[in-house]
Image (tube, rainbow, N blue to C red; front, side, top):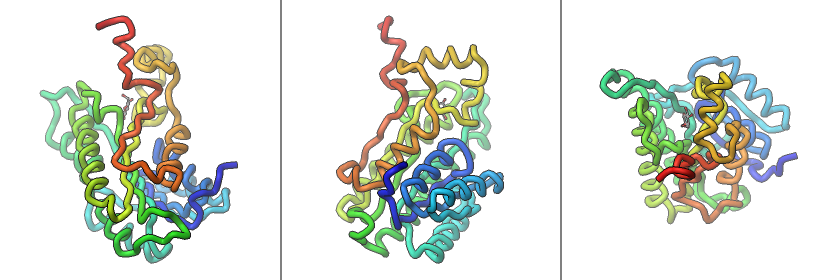
Length: 268
Ligand code: BGC
C-alpha cells in the first residue's frame, strides 16, 4: 500500500478524467490527498476516477471547468476553497494536440493548443499562487507553502515536425515554470515540470495501437517499453510531497531514455 504522505492536503488535477491526469489523480488520492478531478468533457469518466479515489478512503470531487477560460478557472478554485478551505497542490495537466503540417496549420489549431496547454497552465497557476500566498505555510501539512507541477513533455526540448503548436506550448511551459519557481521560491512555493515521453494514453493512440506503430516507437526508446500513467503518478506524488522539498524549477524527464537520442547510438 502506498505511503499516505499527502494526508490532509488538497490537490487540483486538471484534465483528470483520462490519460496521465487520471493516473496522477489516482496516485495522489492513494497517497491520502483530497483530490479535485477537473474535466471538461465526459463527466462519467471523471466520476469513475472520483470513485476509485474514494475506494482508498480519500476524498474526491469532480469539477467541470475549461482551463483556458478565466472565469471557469476562478470558479473552480472558489468551489475548491469553499469545500476544502484551501489548495495545497496544483497539477497543471490538461493538454491536447491538434496536429498539422506547419504550412497547413490553421490559426484555430494553433490557438486552441496554446490556449489550453499554455494559457490554461498560466490561469490555474495564478489562482493557485494567489491561494498559497493568502493561506501561508501550514507546517503540520507541508514545509512548503504550495506545490505546482506542470505537465510538460519531452517536446519542451525535442522539436516536433507536424506538431509545431504542441512543441511551442511545451517550450513555453518550461519558461513559465522556471519563472514562477524563481519568483516565488522565497515564499516557499515549489514549481516543477514533469516531462513525459511516450505514455500509453488516448492522446498518442496512433503511436502504439498497431504492432508496426509500436515497433517504430520503440526505435526512439532505449528502455524498450512504452510508459504508463502509473509511472507519472508516482513521480507526481514525490514532487507534491516534502520528500522532494529541495527540488524547484526542475524539468524532470520520465521517458524511458527518449531524450538520450537513440538515433545517435549508431549514427553521428
Ligand atoms: C505527446 C505524445 C508523444 C510523446 C513522445 C507527448 O508529449 O503528447 O503524443 O507520443 O510526447 O513523442
